Length: 193
Image (cartoon, rainbow, N blue to C red; front, side, top):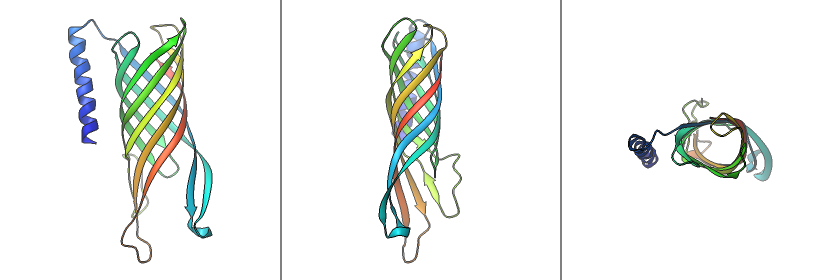
């Protein structure tokens, strides 16, 4: 976690020093909301540990704030909130957005965010302790709007999010915990300027 925070600070400091020596750099924002879709396998203790699979849908919101480094590349920080069924996680990540191709008013872009999620706003039940973990979120998107003006965005990404939950021990257990990995397909709509 300290390494990610240090890397993010170095990235922003580097962009700030570049901004002072180069021509004026443009601020970039992508604010998006959408859904996280996936299938979950788990053992059901009430049916003799029979393995079950369920579909899960969760809500996600994120904002990317950065600087236009080149005509096609933006780099910055992504802040978000993901509402899973049993966890509310807040990812903070270093992110990039890169315009791949397109025409005058329609651009295909690539996106990559990597960082760490915290459980700052999550409210645990008694004797439970939820902690976030590493997060990576690569994908592609479509930006519709005039160059240099506000645009409508639609992104399709893969999101891998880790979490750790300490649980109260049962019967003769000394400790009980669960390491979770949320693998989700994310579909987000938003705006960019």
